[in-house]
Length: 196
Image 1: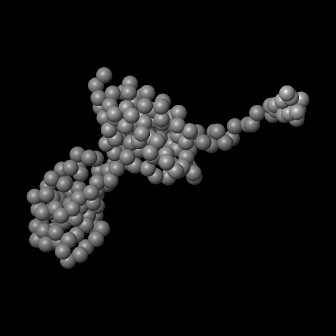
Image 2: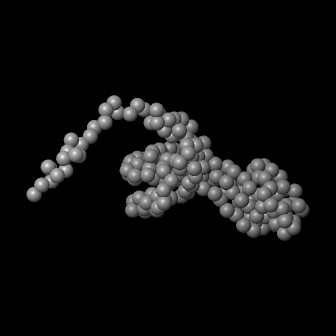
């Protein structure tokens, strides 16, 4: 099987040390994480990890099964780029005189939908969002004009053909409890059962 880019989406409880356990699963299998983002999800108390890796589908399938075995992981999905809507965000620090004097740079920033975040006398900070290739092209162009600093954020993604975890959580909460409670028949007979 050929390796390709997959986006893994994990829905988890918000617990201390979980990110270490998750990254440990990847490192034990010698799988490099290209991008990692974690944030609250649409359901209170549930967090969402978005992880990008290059691997073949069989390995990703097994990896998701292993991730779901973690106590705090509720669900793990994996998708190709065609099955998700995704973006990455980037910040660019450009010398102020380049932007004000070079019309091409201003047009370039408009073409890529960059918006101004900070304006100072010595530099201007712009932000933009898009696919990795778009961000790379803009970075390459701005390097020609003295790009001072650049940082890219991790991928954020939404699965196209899924209602997400919210619907599943509501279904789980609405399920009727068991009709009768099963109790241990020896619960009140401790002295009779455990005699020597």
